[in-house]
Image 1: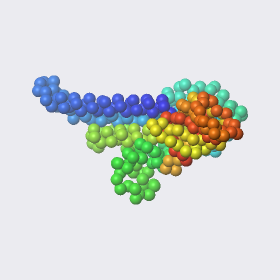
Image 2 (image 1 turned 120 degrees about the horizontal axis):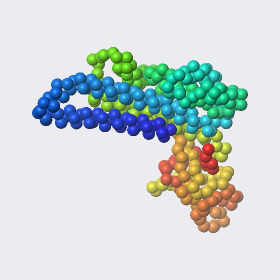
Image 3 (image 1 turned 90 degrees about the vertical axis):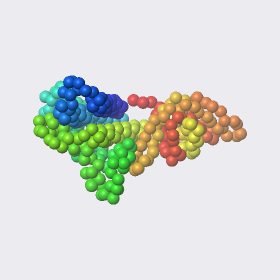
Image 4 (image 1 turned 30 degrees about the vertical axis):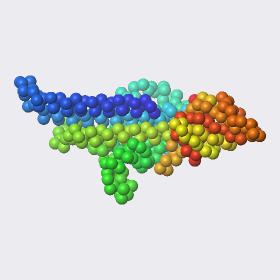
Length: 355
């Protein structure tokens, strides 16, 4: 999910820089006394209206593109670890044909210009007749945009990720940001929290629609309030990206045939030294491992690379560093060194090969 969030954050930073330039420009004008400066000052109110409209359109455009991009990126990443169409889960297998038909009827949209009818028919044959896992990611996009929170929630339901509006409340940095913005909201029930916490998205959509349809409004956001909206959207998108990466890792974990390895102990000194047992496969320095842990009832994952290995041999033999290990009966313990932080209760799997 790296491409989508990288492009989105780049656009967010461009909007921030634009705001800063305008604010400095305004400050400079206050100290100038000439005809050009007077002309600009006399028109500054209208310029601020234009700035507001540009900010809203730019932010919503970047956000809509991110949502559509990250969903497609998720489908392409996840399907590498899905054995067949039937393994996508009931939500996708029941609704895919209807979504396929909607896409087929929308091929005249510019954003679907890369998809041909032939490509669509071939895909339907593959998934329905041959039970292959490869989907057309664009099937899961909303043709009309207007990405309010409820619409986005339904889009993620369609790709098998339920109640994303609830689950995102457990993810950083969105979780901490909401805590800072809405002090005292902890007593609200979940439906009230959802309505309050995601109001910035619905507000952004409404403001964008007003501008796009030519309506005029006196309810303009000043730069400070717009910066809050900008940060809200940024934190929201970043947390979506983390959640989707975890969902891909979850499928990767399930796809990997290796049994989870037990972590007996962890020692930290700038790096993590993991003492392992119940190892059922060969391991080599340079191999990747996938770490699985729980955080706020969410399944979280990250990858790490084995940098060094050391074995303790029974019968009084000394420990020694090795580059390769294969399970043998006389092995007492194996310690591996990685650079990431790991805890004893977390689970790991060896990723011998990646797809």
